[in-house]
Length: 410
Image 1: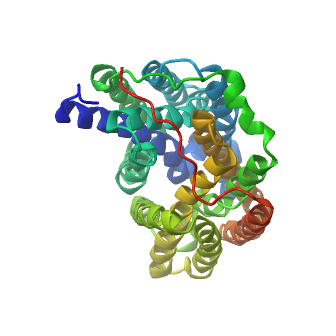
Image 2: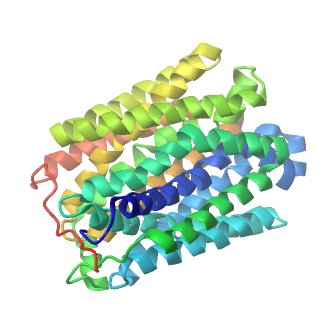
């Protein structure tokens, strides 16, 4: 750590956060552009039924989530001995290739394939980049390192997603994804220049990382992460048609609704980090309860502009409030498997993403209206809450994550 100047250290941290920013863009931009994607790639379906076309386009979100689920634990296990800097650069290269392919592919099926390829790197990036950031900051800063990388994702929801959504509405959804690919390319070049190498943690191996799967408590926590936050994604995935078809506002308002939701997410993760340090279990329980209440508020009030914006803020805040606590709970359940723990958390969150988008699309396509996804979201949040209660009753571990050895600069 002492070999780095302050300027080089912060440049490296910002480069890693920029990768998180790009991941926030590629994951959430589709949610504001589903009508444009449906009109372009599924014109016949959209012409017959706009809700059915939007629901089918929702596979852009579900396919990405499936790619994260497939890639996160696989890459974490296979790269246990790969230097983290080299791994991060390789993952960024994969994201550049997959996102560019998504933007240029001529058919809906090929676009989905590109989304899946890009998603393979998502979960492992957060784990590897968080470890790199911790090594740059010095011993005892694993949580801070991960928060810096995730901070890029929250910044994307506050600033980047609304801007890229506006670009996609004005110039086509393909222009939006080319812009996201450009963000990943800039991140790759910057990281190659300024991020220093960090030693691989001693004892790292595929077998060691795979030990996480032996714990029943790990599987139960994964279920909580996969189902509870899906209530947020059931709402967030269809915020564009809710804004235009339910509230009756113009498509130009959608980026502002997304920015409001991003502001809530930023506030939520800041409050959630403080709350998780004070009482981990209470944070999970109150967070999932708050998510159910906020989604209900959205469903009841989104037909009015004030309710739409207020509900978007509350849903965003509740969704990110629980992230630090759920990540910490998974670290408790799977101690000593640093990269796998972060990867599993991202995989489970993206199961949640895909589940919320897919089930929300089903109820919308069934003709129950765009706000029917909110009522589904309440049920998902409450199921997650019940699973969390069961997890805590069965858990015999302490409620504070155990110390894990921090990587060092080499």
